[in-house]
Amino acid sequence: MSQQATSPVSLDQLLTESETSDLISLTPRWLQKKRMEGGGIPFVRISSRCVRYRRRDVVQWCEERLAASTSDQLGEQN
Image (cartoon, helix red, strand yellow):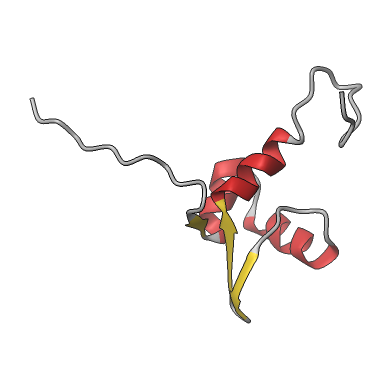
């Protein structure tokens, strides 16, 4: 049996729009819309046509949206 080397996932890894949308199960179009209107995941603008998302920001954005019930308000602190 061969051992497969596993590298730890870096929270500072930059993800493409496609990788980010796959990770959070939302469309790239949703990410684009949120970049325009605000309220989405913080992003890194590499150039005018190149946008990346830090894995740590994607994870934090998801953590901030954890809920125990459907009546929980978005952004509500416990």
